[in-house]
Image (cartoon, rainbow, N blue to C red):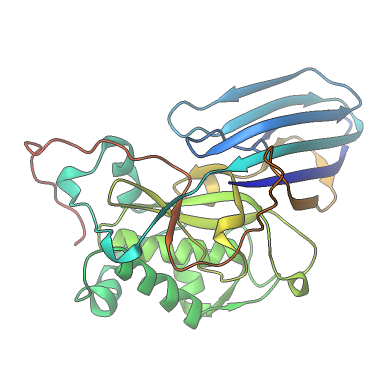
Amino acid sequence: MIRLRVALEIDYEVGEHGCDFVFNIHAAHTPRQHVVAEALNLSPALPSLLETDLATGNRYLRVKAQAGALKVGYGATIDLHHHVAEAAGIGEVPVARLPLHALSYIYPSRYCQSDRLHRLAMREFGSLWQGYGRVQAIRDWVLARTTFTSNSSNSESSAIDTLLGTVGVCRDFAHLMIALCRAINIPARFTTGFDYGADPALGPPDFHAYVEVYLGDRWYLFDPSGTAIPMGFVRLGTGRDAADVSFATSFGAVQSSAPRIAIEAIAGNDGRLITPYHCAQALSTDDAEPRAGAGFGGAHGVG
């Protein structure tokens, strides 16, 4: 078990007409990610509503702020009990046997135009063994052909833009990997979170975007940007792409500072301190899920 402690602060200056916020900054509850303790601090103190999307597990905080300064603080202690498996034994799931919740993650979305990448994906990966190794090959392909460059993209950049431009930040790497997976009918989703172990040379700690791919019977973790340690990911939200899981959405005039994030590994209840590390095994913070029955009819997709 790995125990991580995270802290987040963001400063806002709200315009004269006030602003409604929807935040996705609370650590998600998953079968293998346990929120041991957490605290939210709003200054000034404001009424807030915290709700959980039952379909995704994403936790959304709603805040209505008046004009003036607003400071948002969140802190949590999280235990990670990873499912660890040998990658060679994990296969892909045929579309006809995918669980219902995974189906939406094989279709194109705003930033992941998988329908336009089908021919490329088939040429590069179509002949590979259909399992974890093929997904790892996609991850490695994206990493090898894309350079991590701060401020090289914007909120409109898509998987196609990253493919052509060959530069990006973590969200761009994630979009391209997701699009290539979906292009050959492998469910893949965009995930946001805190990450332990990012290279300090890349700048101060920030939110991280990574990929979860449905293989075998659960969602497995991948980091196509190569900047972090998957064992140190704390999930905040999952969605089809970045449009679904912004850490903050504002409805009104507002200016904000860069988020200030701190994350550290601490000892668990047993006194043991385990620091996240790179490993060759497949990792997941989900448990196994039932698949569709064998009598489910065939499906037609891009692959």
